[in-house]
Image (tube, rainbow, N blue to C red; front, side):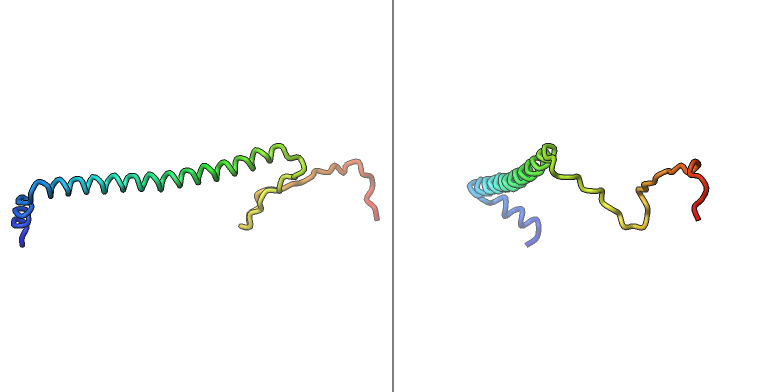
Amino acid sequence: MNGKQFLEMLSRLPPRVWIQAILGLIGFVVLAVLGFAVIAGVAAILLVLLLAFRAKAWILSFFRSDVEPAPPARHHDGKITDVQFEIVDRTNDGPPRP
């Protein structure tokens, strides 16, 4: 069967077959869209719950005074990123000790 014969066969189908095919295609599209909407809705709800939980912990951290802030994370790539030093004035110390 070539393409021309296939198109001729489709043109000879009764109208009820075309209506059923169109309704089936529309139903498939509607179900696909609704299914995607349900999946996206569940993902959105989970994301909102996760963000709400993290926001609650973040807001409560402002009101806790017993928790000391953690020191900044250290990077182990061999580069020095933060240096603390103290300047000492030794001009008035006197003679050096033996």
